[in-house]
Amino acid sequence: MCEFISWIEKDGQVYYLTYRDIYHTRRGKELRDYCKSKDDLIGHGAIRFYYDNFVGGEDKECTDFSTPDNFPPEIVEDIKKGRMAGLDIFPTKLLLDKIIYRNKAYAEREKAYAEWKKADAERKKADAERKKAYAEWEKAYAKWKKADAEREKADNQKWGWMQFKIVKNRNKLWR
Image (cartoon, rainbow, N blue to C red; front, side, top):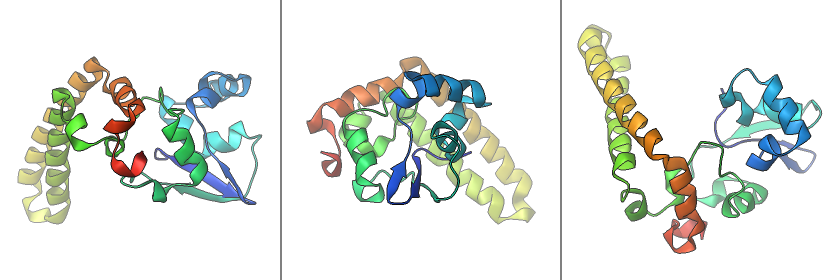
């Protein structure tokens, strides 16, 4: 599975998909029918399909939203204009920490996810302690799943994009 945001650079052009492309165009409807999973809608295969199955170019993706410098200017512009809203993904680095952590469900999810990531790294590190680390991993993962369910209930993706619309709430690099 490709990461959000994925794009393809070819012949000086940057190809990627926005919410409008996927959900408000005839080709987007064909793409949704073509893809096996909702998660596939943001990947390189979906991009190629949407743009008439072109070949070549360089597949790129980045999940580090700490700075707009990690993305092509076209993508940065569409993020700032809210054109990714609705994709059920919200990168927390787009907002100031104080804004993110106002939402308790989001804060709990992030904390639980960090615990799970730490436990997962330990699980991979020591085969001799695999059973103990795996138990910790399961506990942390269960906690994360519970927190994630709460976050979904609160519909944090939409909340995050709504907060992002308010320029003063944005991480300074995304203003």
